[in-house]
Image (cartoon, rainbow, N blue to C red; front, side, top):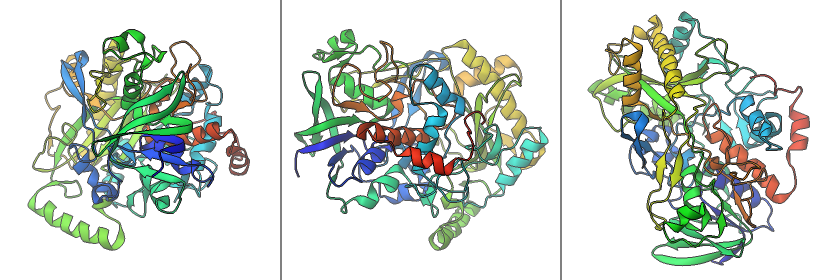
Length: 549
């Protein structure tokens, strides 16, 4: 294998797969995609229910922990991140959500030209093949399959009826003209199987495109610079350290936790922090690793006798055997579940301009990220704060690239975050106590003794953690603390770009996988210097949708 390529992409997750797959559509462009994990083809990845085997374990998962969180009574939080081709899109709940239009308009208002909602919507459509919705909001023919759930679970109707009973609005498409409301999520699945970023953009072309080189089990140690120009990377594979060279660019796509770590290990970051580890500075960029944002999340859990919910029981085991047969024959039923099958975007106060909380309704009882098992069956409901004010950091703890970074999301550090979570708690509990759901509940597992606002604050501090959406640690902007410019080029350096969730200036109001792939689709045009979206926008849009949602 050659050691020189036009582009080296570090990280085979949602951003990296899109960039590698799209750039190699040009047969004259060579790309090397580096991934620390395996090729993402295992049954645990392909079968949607495999999430439950990966999320709480180290299977295809870095399984990081946070530093002790003052806002969570000193607890360490959990930060699962995908370690396989496809990255976190290979282990996540597959929910296809873009966020609110105002999130992207805010990016543009901060000086990030080209990133308003009206300008990024065509890139969402470019990536998407929506199996069921055909209108100006959605795309057809893209690599990423987006489908309705195939579980046929009656809890969908019960959840929607509960929302009606308590007066919550309904929406049929969280990515359409009205985000606010309760509904059933669409998922990144193709014919009942997970459609990860790898399956969408890379796996179909491996062995067929001679210009696409995918190197798994490869841990990048540092970026190689000649002066202020990135010219390659040092990578460790099977105990052998090798240097790969990039003729045009190195593209970092290692995610919001490991991209800043790799920059700092390579001499790019705050000069004083680098000096603590004896790392020779290449570029003083004080914003590297700062501005970490994540959605703080609380989970209600309830026991149920209904076998429509998942759990551990003799009758449930027999149903799973039937479900396995059905999946084999039809690619339908419980094994196609993403667990978080329904949800909503809601306002805790009517005067708010946009929803400030998101719900994920789960057809199983979840405790500590599924790391604690409970016998029997149950249901759960997450409530997360969409736009937290707290800001955290990612720092290095060693010069060893294999050592986990120090992750401090600073959950509930801002007291207003806690108060909004109290409001979200009340809205969610009201929904779960509606007759359509309470009729199937036998016990409130975690909050039955919570009565007062102080009780709510206490249980929030005791049980809140991530809903897996870290962003912002290599913020895009034009000020001195920004890490990349609006073209995603690392400021002050040449031949180095970042294409992952770390570039988000602010956390979007929703799940972050689809926005990360949108960022990568747009990055491909920025890299090439040629836009693919003008014709797409003209043919697919009959009106300007940017003012709604």
